[in-house]
Image (cartoon, rainbow, N blue to C red; front, side, top):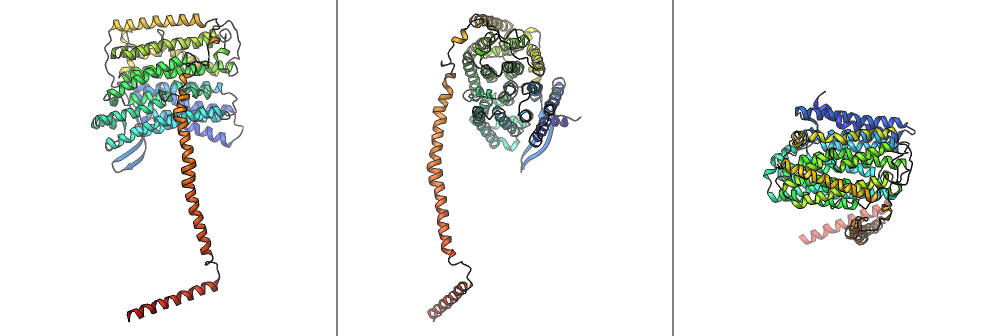
Length: 625
């Protein structure tokens, strides 16, 4: 099988599956659920297998897979090819995107069982991963942008999936609009790149080889605008407001969007343009601080949330903040490593939350989900492992990836970044174990419905990966050789951290984490402390950011749109066009009296015209004589 065929099948199999499911869903009533399930799992499963194949040869043989589908635009020297390329970075991305997406598909088949819109759900689901594959495998940023927009469109459909409830529709709209703000920045950056170096080609290789020709101020502007796109897609301050509301969609949607796909797109895009960001130090530092404030802000807000899915949503925003901190100081491989481990434990956490929600008839408030450990022991173990992992307890996977970020921040010399990251890390431990101790450690006992095997099996696989995924990039201090960093071979900045400093950082961080776990246990396990926490505090209400945005942005724009609608659109434009039409109508009525179809009148007109002509000629001749 040729390289191009492998790439084409990997990309197009979920698209074909989505198309078949959609056609069946709209044309045939009463299609058996297992047919939809088979098509959906086939589409995502084939891609997962081919992704493992590509990643294997990329890792062990440094092989680059390419495919040219067709030429989209050809205007003189400017050519845009619809081409795919699986280099080390793209192969690494699909290594976890495709398998995790497949596992979430399996999980969703149980979670969505007997849903009246089962077919529509999986059509959207497969279409979503098609666009994500297109985003990652695109050989140029223009095609990448198509995948970028496609992910935004399908996420809108999935977040507002239960559109009968208007709140879900609003949540989908919010996600769509917030991402369009970010996408305007991304698109503007592409336009500037075209104007500056477009004649040299718009593939990633051509762009990155020609960026030295761009003057520094323009280069900084392009780098900033690209990051604006990443802010929206990866939910960083100030474009993060859509992420908590995205929990309106079914839980498998939350797992897919938050774990390995949509929200990681911004991190991937910045890493893809690493050579550009290495030339724009100020913008890179800005990225690092946006990540730091986002990580800290989200962690603080999560400490006073009561909806189990919103706690995890803010957790996603916080973990993405860690990745952007690493990107901002130039530790690109380190950021991607944490993205890799995050895909597994965050998918596991969302699946665990979904399993609890289904078992207890769609309750999501952790105050109503008390004492379920005895009735759901397997689920408890898996969620506990995921919580220990996100807390960076050794030797679980996130211990290695988060420690690598902390070491890079420490060695970068930016003390405020390190301190904010350390604080956010400890807050992560607090809000995650608050969730665990409230839900599982209680004097109240509850028994929920048993979960289907199709939900538990994928969670078991993700539990194993959450434990061992960190071995892919073991640091030298533990006998590793940073395999993943060497494989990616991105333009990372080199940070020198002695083994003593690294051990010291690990030890301090681990001891602090254990201390926070003990404190959280004393505060929430087998107590009613959670019931005493108010929903009306500043933190519980997310610092009223939504209300501030509504007052500062939404309401003024709404008032302006009303002004334009009434006074400009209606009074000026519509009335002008209406009056013009009215005048033409009156003019038409006037002329209709002459054009009435009466032959005698037409003969009279001809006679009058002929007489008038003769009179005119007579006058001219008399004047000439």
